[in-house]
Image 1 (cartoon, rainbow, N blue to C red):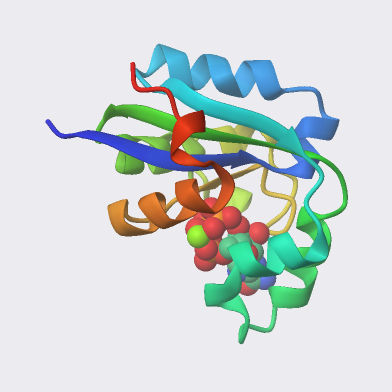
Image 2: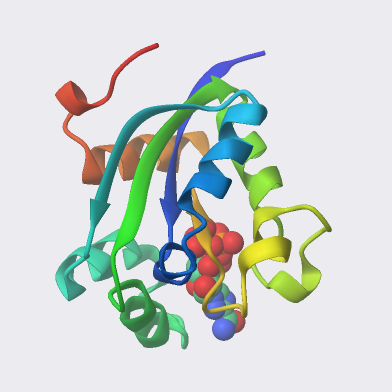
Length: 141
Ligand code: RTP
Ligand code: MG
């Protein structure tokens, strides 16, 4: 299996629900190690830049406004097949469609307030990690 890194964000709704530790525990129990982390209240510009691929979508404004509604917890995760493993732990984008036992099934309220972000490809993972962390702040383990 390939050792990978992926970018995870615990969104404002889940930070407000005080389930950061609960979500970290799921990463740890499934072989994903935190190799960089910080809490941050994103500016509008930072959120727009992060989700730039979605800027033409009808939900872009709502997505950005939600992401700046409170602090988020941002982490790089490392492990075997980390990108797909994290997506599996997260569950489907809409919590109504998320499999039982996934983070979104357990903690998300709606397609907007859906608890977590995870990179969707290895290529995007590298871009997203670099967006938030200088290489010196990512700790190989
Ligand atoms: P994320 O990027 O946050 O990890 O979520 P994702 O890959 O599962 O979903 P994506 O298609 O990348 O969409 C990014 C976020 O935009 C919101 N969204 N709303 N109303 C809608 O149809 C809609 N579609 C997407 C969601 O909050 C999603 O997480
Ligand atoms: Mg996405």
